[in-house]
Length: 337
Image (cartoon, rainbow, N blue to C red):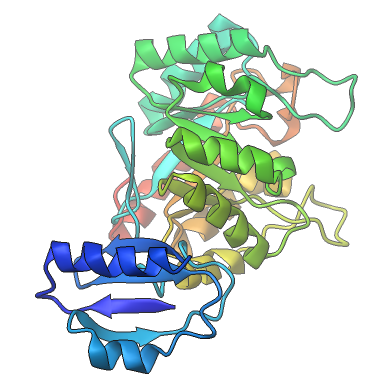
């Protein structure tokens, strides 16, 4: 249930209103937008007579019930788009933010060369995996803590904010200086991890699981938000279907639905969706066309010899060509790259 407040409601009145509901056992979310302020009740609101509240409480303009299970991330509670700031970079608000870098950090030379190349082409955030969840226990598992250190060195040298994936709560100490913490597809419903990362209060990039629904993705975002962070970026990265010619199937419609249902920014990872290098650029253009807030692309200095995901990685020249193609298209969409 959400109460939309009158524009002239004083803050002390709002605070008192919130305390009254919390004293009755409800959790609350106070949302401030450019057009209105709102208080959302979390809990079993079936016994709440919202018409009576509107009639008897001077600061309440109107009320409505939220039927979806997700509340805090719901656009009904926060009608305006959320804008995320990470290391000086904006995600949302008329921008198309490109995140690029290798699947795995493999060496200092590799991550620095890629970082410098993607920055020169216009990427605003550097991605790089240090802790790698791999299907096979015999595959490269990442450089672990050393990988994070190398990623942070690349950040210091290039000025690019960085994003990397956390796999469990024991790794929190390594992510203190990482700008964006990624929750990968395999951990999307690791609820203890979601709560732990939410309590860190950092920007979180939440990837959709390969077999999860849009609602389940939003519920995972709800876990993060109720734990303590409202700085969440949703990421569509393809889902598993009966199709075998691509690694996954990019659900491009999910971008539109997520933007309708939630106020959180939405980006897309076409590299993991396709798993095929030649499909990344065409899918990236589709991502821009449907109104996504950004893109995450895997770029490697030597894809043929990459320790992970080389088949879907662009080399720096291919990435530069993609960026040159995207920029005029973004201008037509009134978005800045």
